[in-house]
Amino acid sequence: MKIKGIAGEAATMVSGNLLAQLIALAAYFVLTRIYSPDDYGLFNIFYSYIEVFIILSTCKYELAVVVADDEREAAAVSRFALRLNTVVSLLLLTVALVLWLCGALPGNFGQLGWMVLLIPPMVFFCGTSRIYSFLYNRFHRYRQIALSENVNAGSGALLKIALGLLGMTPAGLPVGTVLGQAASNLNYRLRLRSLALPSTTAADGKAAARKHSNFPRFVATKDFVNTFSANLPFLWLALYFNRTEIGLFGLALTFTRQPVLLLCAAFERVLYARGAEAVRQRQPLSGLVWRFLLIVNAVALPVAIAAWFLAEPVFAFGFGTRWQGCGVYVQAVIPWILLTLTANSLMFVANIFSTQRTEFIFNLAQLLLRVVALYIGIRMGSFLLSIRMFAAVSALVSAALTVWYLWQVRRYDATLR
Image: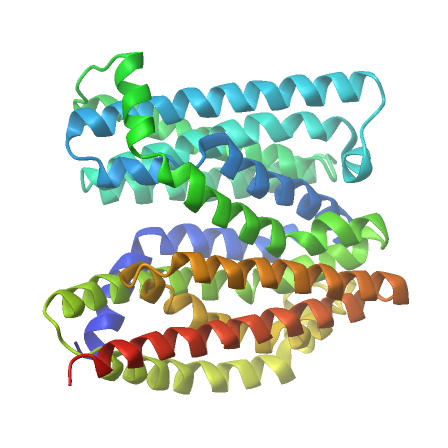
């Protein structure tokens, strides 16, 4: 499998939501002139809770939709996931409402104030949209998935800009995000009949859920640990440092990590398919993997070096003078982001060789190391030190994962001789 082929297939994967990503990123050039770093710091706290709760709301049952044996089972498990998402969202709303009315919002929730009530509907709309996207994916309705993602990005950006211009700061950011996600959700629902899903009962849903119980037990657990771990700077450091620093770091991370994660997801899917095919045919993997790593890093390394030197003036020019200071955070995370490109693209190795349990140990170790790193930064009273240590231990684990993936590939190839 040539690298050119991998790049082409990855481009096809990315192109489906590329416009949505470009809209979201382009909107920052306007939004950062309306909202302050402090406003974005609060929004980063808000959205970090969304990313954690969304895993609990669906328990990753949306993944079972694609691998279901037939359309009836796919319909049953999707409807079970939708009901689960509704129940969890209502429970979150009840708890949030009681705590807010009693004036007993703990920790970061206290900083959000009444905006904490936006978390449950956002979790609900995100959860249903994820379930629908995998359902449409099963039926190869990629255009509808891309359309919904573009509706989300476009309407959310316009609403955040409009609300900001009307003086709704900082609330315009979370409110616009919720409404944009709701619009995307509506777009899915309006076209749901076109799938012609078979009717199912609640018993069918429960049976499908039991059959695919590995998703909540293993996949959801792994994703929860990883998501919680990745969002620790926003969830924990916000209790000790001002939101302006949180906002500056959040913007730096958005323009470094998000594009890389998008590429990783595309590369990992393509490599997964090609790697699994090679293993089924008892063909070696080392050539494919090493060519991919060499070419991708030959492109990524110069970009990373340029970003290291140009981040501060580019951010200040593109987003305004009050965003000066983002560059130092870009420099702090670049080694981690560069190693993430390699490690995340090779995650398919653990799935092919069924070594997810060992991979989970790496994830737990990363969580513990990140906790220690942030704790030291908090004790030293330095937000920048916290981020540098957080990025350093993350880079260390990414490097270790890459070595482990390559070792598995080499061990497999040795069995073919």
